[in-house]
Amino acid sequence: MAIPKARLELIKRGYDDGNGGSCSEDGYIKIRFGNENPIETTGYRLKVVSGTFDSHGVPDFEVMPRHHNFDENSLYIRWYDGGDKVKEKIDFVLQIIAVSPEGKESEPYLLAIQHPGDQSNE
Image 1 (cartoon, rainbow, N blue to C red):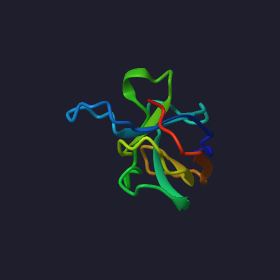
Image 2 (image 1 turned 180 degrees about the vertical axis):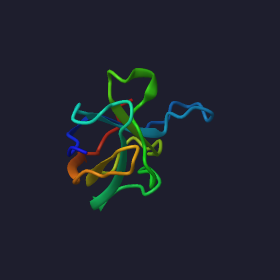
Image 3 (image 1 turned 120 degrees about the vertical axis):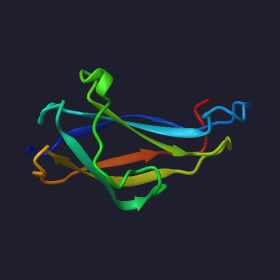
Image 4 (image 1 turned 90 degrees about the horizontal axis):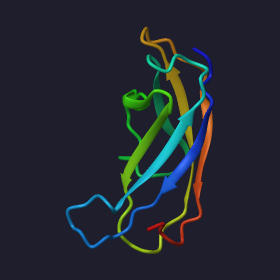
Protein backbone atom coordinates (compact mmCIF):
# COMPACT_ATOMS: atom_id res chain seq x y z
CA MET A 1 0.00 0.00 0.00
CA ALA A 2 1.22 3.47 -0.85
CA ILE A 3 1.32 6.13 1.83
CA PRO A 4 -2.03 7.90 1.53
CA LYS A 5 -2.02 11.59 0.76
CA ALA A 6 -4.87 13.49 2.37
CA ARG A 7 -5.92 17.08 2.84
CA LEU A 8 -8.34 18.81 5.12
CA GLU A 9 -11.15 20.09 2.93
CA LEU A 10 -13.75 21.36 5.40
CA ILE A 11 -14.52 21.86 9.06
CA LYS A 12 -18.15 22.67 9.81
CA ARG A 13 -18.86 23.56 13.41
CA GLY A 14 -22.14 22.77 15.15
CA TYR A 15 -24.76 25.39 16.00
CA ASP A 16 -28.22 25.55 17.59
CA ASP A 17 -30.90 25.92 14.92
CA GLY A 18 -33.71 25.84 17.50
CA ASN A 19 -34.90 22.40 16.39
CA GLY A 20 -34.18 19.83 19.08
CA GLY A 21 -34.66 17.00 16.58
CA SER A 22 -32.06 18.15 14.06
CA CYS A 23 -28.36 17.36 13.98
CA SER A 24 -27.30 21.00 13.68
CA GLU A 25 -25.16 20.70 16.81
CA ASP A 26 -22.92 18.13 15.13
CA GLY A 27 -19.62 19.16 13.65
CA TYR A 28 -18.07 17.67 10.51
CA ILE A 29 -14.53 17.31 9.26
CA LYS A 30 -14.14 16.42 5.58
CA ILE A 31 -10.89 14.77 4.51
CA ARG A 32 -10.14 14.25 0.81
CA PHE A 33 -7.73 11.51 -0.25
CA GLY A 34 -5.45 11.40 -3.25
CA ASN A 35 -5.50 8.49 -5.68
CA GLU A 36 -2.37 6.69 -4.48
CA ASN A 37 -4.41 3.57 -3.60
CA PRO A 38 -7.45 1.92 -5.24
CA ILE A 39 -10.42 4.03 -4.21
CA GLU A 40 -12.99 1.22 -4.25
CA THR A 41 -11.02 -1.17 -2.00
CA THR A 42 -8.83 0.90 0.33
CA GLY A 43 -9.79 1.27 3.96
CA TYR A 44 -8.20 3.67 6.44
CA ARG A 45 -7.24 3.46 10.10
CA LEU A 46 -7.39 6.81 11.87
CA LYS A 47 -5.83 7.79 15.17
CA VAL A 48 -5.26 11.08 16.99
CA VAL A 49 -1.51 11.12 17.72
CA SER A 50 -1.17 14.60 19.22
CA GLY A 51 -3.46 17.29 20.52
CA THR A 52 -6.97 16.50 21.69
CA PHE A 53 -10.24 15.77 19.97
CA ASP A 54 -13.52 14.11 20.95
CA SER A 55 -12.58 10.43 21.15
CA HIS A 56 -16.03 9.40 19.89
CA GLY A 57 -15.51 11.41 16.70
CA VAL A 58 -12.61 9.34 15.36
CA PRO A 59 -13.61 5.73 14.70
CA ASP A 60 -11.45 2.95 16.18
CA PHE A 61 -12.10 0.65 13.22
CA GLU A 62 -11.25 0.73 9.51
CA VAL A 63 -13.33 3.15 7.46
CA MET A 64 -13.72 3.83 3.75
CA PRO A 65 -14.58 6.95 1.76
CA ARG A 66 -18.21 7.44 0.82
CA HIS A 67 -19.33 4.73 -1.59
CA HIS A 68 -21.99 6.68 -3.45
CA ASN A 69 -19.43 9.02 -4.99
CA PHE A 70 -15.99 7.44 -5.43
CA ASP A 71 -14.89 10.39 -7.57
CA GLU A 72 -15.00 12.53 -4.46
CA ASN A 73 -12.79 10.09 -2.48
CA SER A 74 -13.62 11.82 0.80
CA LEU A 75 -14.21 10.74 4.36
CA TYR A 76 -16.29 12.60 6.95
CA ILE A 77 -15.71 12.60 10.69
CA ARG A 78 -18.79 13.63 12.67
CA TRP A 79 -18.93 14.58 16.33
CA TYR A 80 -21.21 16.37 18.77
CA ASP A 81 -19.88 19.94 18.78
CA GLY A 82 -22.69 21.56 20.78
CA GLY A 83 -24.86 24.57 20.10
CA ASP A 84 -22.76 27.25 21.79
CA LYS A 85 -21.91 30.20 19.56
CA VAL A 86 -18.34 30.39 20.88
CA LYS A 87 -16.35 27.29 19.96
CA GLU A 88 -13.19 25.84 21.39
CA LYS A 89 -10.12 25.67 19.20
CA ILE A 90 -9.46 22.42 17.32
CA ASP A 91 -5.80 21.48 17.00
CA PHE A 92 -4.72 17.87 16.59
CA VAL A 93 -2.75 15.58 14.31
CA LEU A 94 -4.52 12.65 12.70
CA GLN A 95 -2.52 9.58 11.72
CA ILE A 96 -3.92 7.92 8.59
CA ILE A 97 -2.91 4.40 7.53
CA ALA A 98 -4.20 2.87 4.28
CA VAL A 99 -5.29 -0.77 4.54
CA SER A 100 -5.79 -3.18 1.63
CA PRO A 101 -8.50 -5.87 1.57
CA GLU A 102 -5.73 -8.39 2.39
CA GLY A 103 -4.76 -6.41 5.51
CA LYS A 104 -1.55 -4.88 4.14
CA GLU A 105 -0.88 -1.49 5.70
CA SER A 106 0.87 1.61 4.43
CA GLU A 107 3.28 3.73 6.37
CA PRO A 108 1.39 6.44 8.28
CA TYR A 109 0.49 9.84 6.89
CA LEU A 110 0.08 12.70 9.37
CA LEU A 111 -2.57 15.35 8.77
CA ALA A 112 -2.85 18.49 10.91
CA ILE A 113 -6.48 19.39 11.70
CA GLN A 114 -6.94 22.96 12.95
CA HIS A 115 -9.80 25.41 13.46
CA PRO A 116 -9.42 28.68 15.40
CA GLY A 117 -12.67 28.26 17.32
CA ASP A 118 -14.22 31.46 18.68
CA GLN A 119 -17.34 31.42 16.51
CA SER A 120 -19.63 28.91 14.82
CA ASN A 121 -20.28 28.84 11.10
CA GLU A 122 -24.09 28.85 11.15
